Amino acid sequence: MLKELITSLRPKQWYKNLILFICIIFSKNLLNQSMWLNITSAFIIFCMLSGSDYIINDIIDRKKDQMHPKKCRRPIAAGTLDKHIALIAAITLITISLTWSYTINPQFFIASLTFFIMHNAYTLYLKNIILIDILTISIHFVIRAIAGCLAISVFISPWLIICTFLLALFLALAKRRHELVLLGKDAKSHRKILEEYSTDLLDQMITITTSSLIISYTLYTFLADNIYLMATIPLAVYGIFRYMLLIHAKNFGGETEMIFKDKGILTCMTLWLALVIIILYTNNITL
Image (cartoon, rainbow, N blue to C red; front, side):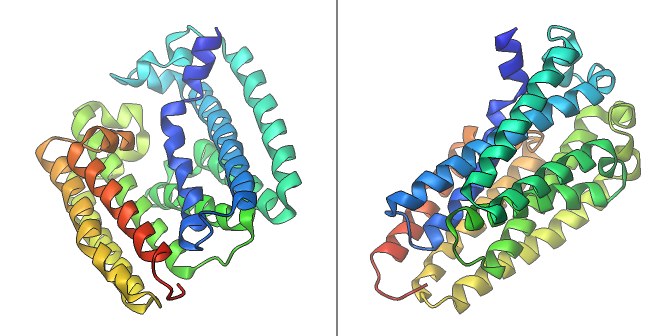
């Protein structure tokens, strides 16, 4: 039962919370040990909140998941984990995580609570409204990024918000497209909102979002005090184009964590992060 419960928490999805660490890198506090304590605690808290939200989502969508070729194997949908036990575990995690978040600071508690409320609003209602569903997913990532800044009390950059939002929107659109292609005629029986989307519409929105993301990131590097950040533009563009290639050529994009299995994207992300750290931490120009 413990194994099934851990599976329902979806630890493979917790990588999404790594975005909380972006603030400690770009605020040039990577070597600040006291901030690392808070940001690591914030990461764990958001993993607990995410895990509890996944359980609640699986309980609500268990019947729909049973019709999905992959999601039918989830413990709650498959019947290998009792929904009542899962709900008790979720409530316990929510209580612990929100209490813990308040000990960091009240602002971070508000961000954590907002994330929890938004996530459940999505699960219960917002995921059934066309366009609002993908926008809500994107806002989840923005809240994560803001929460990281609040946890260590650093400036919340507008560029962090817009680039995070557009990147998350790009990934959300890619996931919707993958679901349409994978499920075909059965798409709307799994997720009702999919009947209102089409691959052509999603492709157009992906094109617009991709263009906006590249322009926004490019403007950020041009306007930043540290002009050497412009050197990271080719890596950012390659990563986005590589993901689009995988979406169309290999029907990629259903589970975002698949990016960690593609050598091209993984290498690109590693090089981008390494280059950003080198530029920020070996140059005296203030960001």
